[in-house]
Image (cartoon, rainbow, N blue to C red; front, side, top):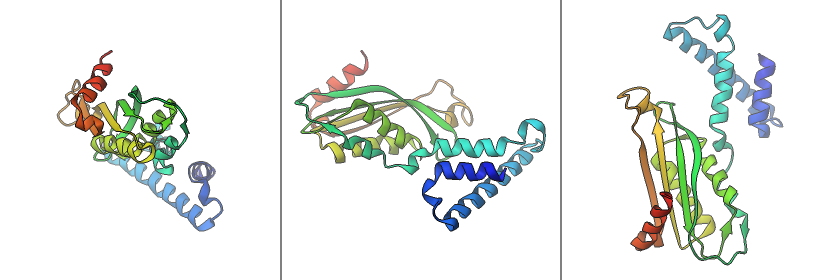
Length: 211
């Protein structure tokens, strides 16, 4: 198992490989976390040493490091690749699928993000917007914060005339536990610049979402 731990830390925290103290600290943390997962399995009523569960602590840790890859990048940097395109109307990328982790229960929430902006001088690649959304999603999150982070990143890097972000998501902390309303979904929005000032601009954005 120790070899797997080293591989996991090297893959996810390559910057620590040149610092034995930092690297060993991460390895120790990984070992403690896996022991805690074994205790959790035991607490819930199962045997962590039975065949189907022996590797589960490692697999869960590996999964969580994947769920939180966004902490190991600066998502807004994806937007810095811009193009000299003379376009002054709405740019909308809709139905960007994402999967995130609720910071309150560590339960998944997932859905789609719709991101639009009206360029001022800078236009970025469409895939860069999706990568930026992914970067903010892969953190411990709440939907409201994620919506704001996306719009703030576009405002800061692209300096557009206006930005509008709408996120629609289902939360397993509400659908699969607690009140257990499986059909409930949550919509959040962030509106900046011309979208905040001009109802016609907002109406155009919203009308395109329904097409």
